[in-house]
Image (spheres, rainbow, N blue to C red):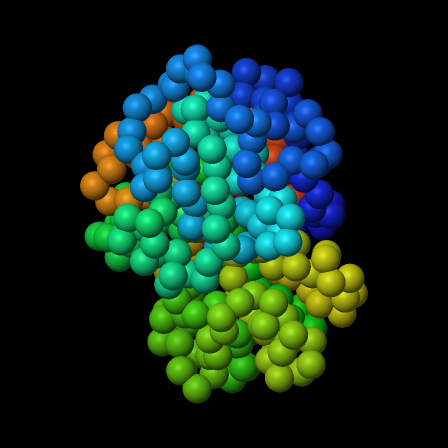
Length: 289
């Protein structure tokens, strides 16, 4: 079982006095923007953006990736650390726009956003229409239920919720039957139906499910993180969150890859994940081969 994460407040993510530490974390009122870019700022990398002097992020609201407060613009999550720093070191303002999955994808393919935030998994279909960065970390698959269901086989004949368009939707429907799988627009809607008894279980990213359970304070909900299962390889192989970006912007992709490598080396990704209870070596290094 995944360690229960701490509450997601932005102050907790001001971690590490490293070369990549956030100057934006100096105060308690950090938001998606940072201090005005200095006129003499010299970017680490050069690349085009959808809007001059701005890094526009199509943000799917899902922790531990990102959460944008629509009233204040405050950010929390891993991306509040990484993308704020990436924008800062490249002399850009950060504009994180909360969008559902399909709209976020369209924003990037149509050139209205530069990067996707919120824990996007690498997939072959996405790679056909979007660029995909270096892997940030490895996210084990999880099942949440009231009954401690802990395997794909345990979901047989159960009514299971998934986020529509997610990596799990199609293979889960093939395994359990489409009548037993219900797709939702948001993780919140899934949990509402799970708590009301309209669902038996839900499947998704283990870290996201664990955070949701902690935030809701419902002791009846149990999250079981799945080890890779050769009988259900597609459904149990850990996902690889990354930063998708506009397909033809190769310079942006190269800059992201360089930044991610440095963030790993400095321990910034490790420290930010730890604030959400994601502390296993498998999350950082991937499953054993």
